[in-house]
Image (cartoon, rainbow over all chains, first blue to last red; front, side):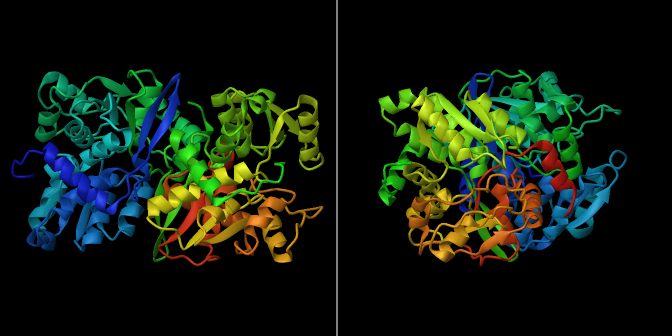
Length: 318
Length: 318
């Protein structure tokens, strides 16, 4: 973890400068939902196909030479993996990524193609954090946590700085898919005047439940399945809960069917390839689960999906 | 047609102002092809899923009240249809669109959903220009040609103004899919220092052949089939040939297999839904048919494709 530093709004702004220096802003696309035209922030169009490139770049580019030499270890179902691997390749840092054996093949291949070493674990069964801790201990590497890290949170928040710039003001509301809460926390810091609505898969609302109870709630021993492979954290982290407490509106969850409907909408109406987890916020919006106005921004966060799964989704209507 | 007015660079700039006032710029995305990082202009992310919204908006918004009252007629396989219908709805103008009966269902439905009246014709068999001329004569409407119109050419050229702004300079080369040559002509006017490379389906290179011969060449009586439904003009028009003569580099054609490979690349690497015709320029780039450098821009022009056809393309490798 991160020696206790808390992420800040100034940190988010610095992250936005660093990210903006190497990556063009992703588009804020108008989208008609019912009779409201609101906005989609298409983070699926980042070079790695997901917003995670932001946190990866800000974390790794903030490391000093000694840290860079030790290399980095990350744990990820695929998008953080690619974000860290992309930044590591560009900075000449060795990267080892702990990934679930059942991650989408597209994500495993893309991570290896970026030059990272991939170490597989069994999901469920093995504790991925233990696998990572063992690697960190063996190699002396720096752990880059997927969401419980102040730089990662600030990096993800850089999307909020871009949104406010593109919109000309802070949004009334930002609807964001939520795994461990790194993106939601970053957006909360970036846009203090905006309502933050995290959207989680049914049964995997570990941020929502933690916000409601005021303490970290772990996922059930036998959680339901979800097609949102990117949104399955065992639990959020104290740093995320601290930032989001009193700021985020808990309680919005989506079903697999709602997510698939959102993927079809994105395909047919936005011409975007969106993975299940990346479509969660749009799913909540389309299902009428969040209020929408013309200053609402819906985060579409990733588009790394296996072709066969995507083909099935767009050719069926369940 | 258009009473002989020729499109101009000033007209393109005015079109860019008009388009920019209602539509955010589409992103210029970095793309790695081999060891070169060049750029994709993602016009498939326009609200109607194609660049044709530009020409439609500039043509219709330039009409005076008397013209607007008479309504408009357009001929289109689908994207120009939606561009005209979108502009007409927004301006309160009645629109009638002549479309081939075998146009993709997605395009037919979307055009009707925008409030336009759709009149179908048989392709091949009926002459679509005759069908449109009859409607214009009957109703006194204004014909908005899909490419042989100075406003339409200027409107499409507004994409080039955006590109130069986003890149900070004119590209070395713009690779653009080409049907009748409206987009290519607009880009040639917008970016006089850029090489313009039109890309056409094999057997449908009516612009390329016309440029080579210095006169308009009509498509063969029995042309080959192509999956690029948006790139099947019978012939280019004098206004397009006049603008492109001496400016565009003819000779680049792509096969259906190359186009499908480009659609798969766009799906997996750019997270973009791209229709066959919209992928033609990318297909030429991936097939090594045009030189690439870091100032090269590849137009990805449309993403309106039927789900079943797209699903087949991404799950096979032919």
